[in-house]
Structures are given as C-alpha cells and as structure tokens.
Image 1 (cartoon, one colour):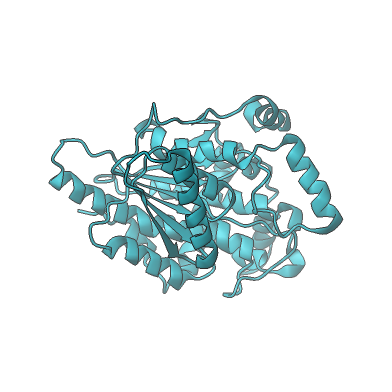
Image 2: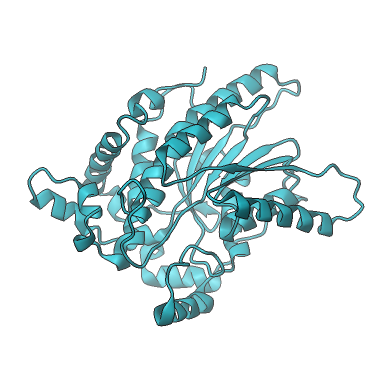
Length: 362
C-alpha cells in the first residue's frame, strides 16, 4: 500500500498540505461557460464563487432546490460586486437550473436542456452533488439515497453529458475565429474514502442465488451505515474507470478526471448526522478538516487548470495521485465490470448506455 492510501497519509494531507488558490493573474475564464452541480452550498458554492472571481462569463448552478439556488445566485453576484465595485465590467450570467439526482427523468431533461439551449457552449462541468446519511434512507424510486445520488445518478449525468460536451466542442471548433478552442472538461468529485470501503455487499450478493449487489445495497437489514458513504464513492470510482475504458476510441476530446477535495468542514454533506454523534463528528471535522473554500480549490483546479495530462486520472491536492488499492487489482477490475453491468440493467428503459457511450458528437 502506497503512503497516500494509508490513514497516516490521509492525516498528513489534512494537516500539512493546503491546495493552492487559483488567481485571476494565472487563469482567465472570460468568455467561458461552466456548470456546477450541488452549487447552492458547501464545496459547490465555494467553487462557483472562485470560478466567477476568475472571470467566468456564464455559470449554470445545477441544484435540487431552485429556491436555495436563487439565494445562492444572489449571494454569488453580491460577493462579486462587493469585491470589484465600480469596475465597469459586465456582470456574469448566472442561471439556476433544476436537476433532481433522485429522479432519472429530471437528469435526462437536464441533459436535453444543456443540449438544446441555443448558443450554449459549455467548457466544463463539475459533478459535485452528493449526500451522506447516517442511517438507511430510500430515495423516491426505492434505491437507497446515498447509492442513488453518489453512484447511479452521478454516473447517468456523466454518461449523458459527455457526448453533449463533445458535440458542442466540435461545433465550436468549426466556427472559432481565433484558432483555439480549449477542450471541454468533465470533472467528477470523488473521495479518498473509497480506499477504506468495506463493500461487503458484493460478497453477500455473490453468496446468494441471483442476487444483485444493488439489491443488497437496497436491503435495510444489510445496510452498514458507517460504510455506506465510503462504498458509494468506491462504486463511483469503479464506474469512472469502466467509463474511461468505454469511451469512443476516436473523436473524444472531453477531458474526464476524478477529483478528491479532501475532508472538509462547513459543507452540508453530513447534515443528516445530528445529536451527540453529530456534535462529535463536527468537532473532528473542525480539528482536521479543510474549509470548504480550500477544498473547493481542488474542484476549480480539476475543471479549469488541469489539462489533457489529467484525462483518466485521479487527482488529489491539485496533482495526479495513486489510485485506491482495490480498484487496480484484478478483483477491482472484475468488480468494475460487474457494477457496470448492474448500472446498465438499472438504467435500462432510461437510456441505452452502450449507444450513448458510442456517440462521438460529430
């Protein structure tokens, strides 16, 4: 096991490494458009603020609750105006678009809106939205909500949005007048906690007749609340690696990376953990956690600084980092194949995954 994947490595990162801020003197996003999911609070909100400070011209806040999204929009614009009063610059275009990651139809409608909105050329998307629950909580469709949001729906977002980014990029290159169009970026927010996932559900499914891992994950009696978030991020990591292997061999210019923001306080990710346990957990987060402003720097880096060399990579502390031990083993590769099959079966009737993956955007 490499040092980065040990608990000591985790503590070292948390206590002694601070991701560097990205400043307007080094990066200008003038003329660019970005989408950030889960952007009304926490890391997504802070990343949105930092992107706007870099001169981003158009920002789409993709949120579950549009009322909270509008409040975030107002706060972002007010902060931006307060930091540069009387600058004479045109304010950025900040929009609030709804997307419900517990509803496949909502995700498909969101992707269609990205595809069909006139004159929209998205330069980058940060898939940041996620949840963590202490106990078992079903989503409206019956799947456990942490698994639904952090794995299944984030995967569907990535699968449907990638060819749209490619198509918009191809069109932008055809009409570009300055000869340079930066390749689009699809940056997915993962987590180092995938390294510590127990993922017993796979073993349980293998020991039973005709039982899927998803069925075990959806069994309240078999739920391990302390491991559920870790497992959801492991499943997302396994998806990411299989997703990369299935991208079109030609005509894929979209840079896809997986970003670890580190352990952060001040976000609403663990908002469901209340009471004495919540107080203890909050104290631990404050003791070793990063502020959401610092954690958000890694999201911004992954989306607008990290280049082609990070395609297919796992990033931590603004640099390429080693993969979690399990995902690069033979068992990990087998698990990735198995979970892709289960993902395809779950989304059957929503999209044809293989067909969408083959789209080149030409």
